[in-house]
Structures are given as structure tokens and as C-alpha cells.
Image (cartoon, rainbow, N blue to C red):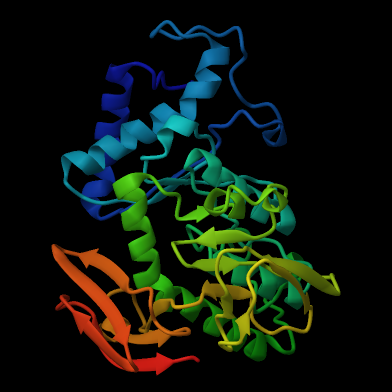
Length: 363
């Protein structure tokens, strides 16, 4: 049996049930699975020649199912004036305003990054989740990409312990942990901490997304359309208005990275200044995921707490790259946070939520 989500009555009945039994219990988001008619699922889905009470046929419903599925549940959150953020297996261009992130059951890391960059052309978001990994290096590189993505997800439904304790599925479920799992866990904990530190910056990127439609994650060519050399690059992507990410992939000795023209760039981790319009090569031995910021950028970097609303997460270090000529702005609960840097002196205005307790001039 398949709900006819194209019909308002089915959406209302289905949504009301989930609202009363799950959302009112405290569930804040949903993963809308198996709505994409993918061949990978083994052909479970309804046939093309089906006809639904709303009048659409099976072929049309395959295009509409994921969209109307989202609408059925999102409406319940809107009725309750509650924000939500979820996952969906099928989406469409006109669903860019929907608070859902696309994902799939295909797990090649490079394909994940390609999808993340290209989905921005239609304003959509993509989730390169961590599930399978063939080595510790693969796990680390995937986790680093996930942290710099629209939704940071580790999907370990099929194993007893987290993947950083045992990569092998059979051994994991048998309770046999890797000999070096403590070291791997510590490294993964550090990387997951980056996500909490990124939240203020990502908040500003998503606020711009809601305001004018600028995808918070997008291909390089969208920011520099006059540079035709960027049109084929799908293994790097822009985050927000001043950050670029170029993931490393396990098993590869190095990778080339293109630095778009029009500005110089700084290595986010070290502050080293690099010339825009050039190409660099990064070796596989590089510890952190390659991230670059435009010269002049001010980047807010939060402290790490044990949960999202911990007091520590509201303390910021303002990282200044170059001359600090690109101030940072973010709105929050009706307040505005603005970070500016002039002549070696930082200042912040506006927010009672975030406190800038340290300025760090990188160059």
C-alpha cells in the first residue's frame, strides 16, 4: 500500500498521525526513506502503470512522491511553529526551500563530493554520510568531508559499536574492537568537534540561503562564472561566502587544488597565504582536510561543548585572515552579531548569545 501524497486528504491523515504520535513526543526531524524508486532497492516500488485516487499515474507519482512526502511532515512542524531538519531520498529543484537534505544508498566518497557540489546548481543540499569505510584513512577522510557538509551524519545502524571502534562489520557485531580504537576514536572526536566549532559560520550561510537563495554549499563556478576553467571542477566546493573545501580521498597519493582568481586565499588551518588563480598540490600525508578562506576573512570559531546548546558553544574565537577587511555578520533570535577588525583591533557588536572572548590574527 502506498499513500497518495498528491492528495491533500492523505497528506493530512498521514501527517496528523505522525504529528500526534511522534512530533508531540519530541521528535525533531525525520528520515524519509525509500521514496526514490531506485533500482538499488530491488524494484519494490509501485509500477509506472499505477493510478492513484488523486488522478496521477505511477510515472508521475515517482517524481512527486518524495516532494509530497516532505510536505506532509513539514506541515506538521509548521503548524506547531517548530523548526525541523531532515533527510529525504527523492527531491526536486523547486523543493529548495524545504528543510530536507538529499542522500542515497550509493557510498563512493568521490561521488558523494560530486553530488554535494552539483546539487547546489538547483539550490538543493546533499548529505555525504559516513557508513562503510575500508580503512582508518578512508574513515577519517569521509568523516572530515561530512563535517564540512550540509548535514553531518554517521550512519551506523548496522553495527553494534561506532565505526571508529571496529571497521569490520562482522567483528564489530561480535564485540571485537580494533587494537588501536582509542587512538582512532580520539581523532574522530576531534573532527566531530570541528562541526560544533563551525556552527556559527554555517548559521550565517544558511541565513543567506533563506534570505536570497544562495546555496550554502555549491560548485566553484557559481561564485566565479567568468572563469571557464572552473566549470569541470566537481571535487571542490564553496561553503558560505568565504570558505572553500577540497577533500582528500583515501588511497590517492595527492590531489591538485585550484584556487579561484579574484582574491588570494589562506590555508584555514595554518594561515599560509596563497595566490588566487593558481594551482597547488596537496600530499595525502596532510593531516586535516584542505580548507581555504578568502584573504581578509573573519571566521567565527566556537568552543566545543558536550551538546549543541552548551554554554561553551556560545564562546567564539574570531580568526582573522589577512587584513580582516571582510567582516562577519550573523542574525540570531532577533539579534545581530557583527565582527569587525580594523588596524589590529577587533570589535563585536550585538549578540547576547555569542561572546567573542578571543581574537586570533592568523597573518
